[in-house]
Length: 293
Image 1 (cartoon, rainbow, N blue to C red):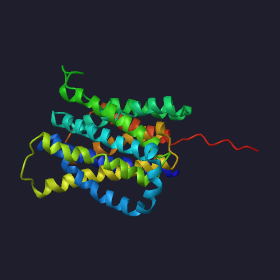
Image 2 (spheres, helix red, strand yellow):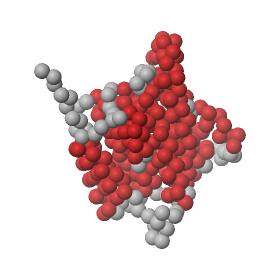
Image 3 (cartoon, helix red, strand yellow):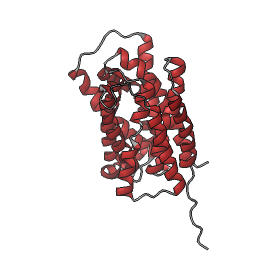
Image 4 (tube, one colour):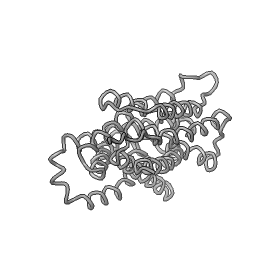
């Protein structure tokens, strides 16, 4: 199994847990408060990465424009996308629908990667992308009479665009800096939102111990998932393959929200799960490099 494929699977698991925790928090706290306080879960990852790569900072800083700057910008953009995702959940969207729908962001990344990085796919991987998109469409179920006009659906278009751009910037950054330092710069991009949001919106106080734990886990799952994603990019995974594959974290989210939050899955969504599994297998089938004799 290629290293990038393994780390992509890890990202799916971690982000799947992030998707589950997002729903109950978004219905009890404001999206602003969720985004700000969940940053606490980023701190352990930031501290470990800074300690491990401190000696390399002087060298890496020379490439800050090509490596660390895109990663930091990706973090800022992604934090705004997260805020929009929490808003979609808060305005009535089911986690079993919002999370898969926002997972369409690879479309943006693929278009950017093909246009700017000149990445190519083999026929099997094209089929994997088609299957993943079909699966995500199967997961989405609109309320009768409100198709394409419900408030939460309109909000989901924001993270689709922003997360797609953010993933592309992370992929670009891994070509000029180590995966660990790219992750460090990316997570630091969440600091501006954590500092500014308390000044923009009033927060709900006090919070229970369980709520604080969920906020911490939300940030931890997200930050560790991004580290494994960037590691997959750094291990040679192409943006047009890794990004669609990791976007299938709804495979983890959906069974958990059914079990823990008692959300129901329709037959169409069940078909989507099968399509998503097939997509993961297809996306992992890279064309072997030609051997020159």
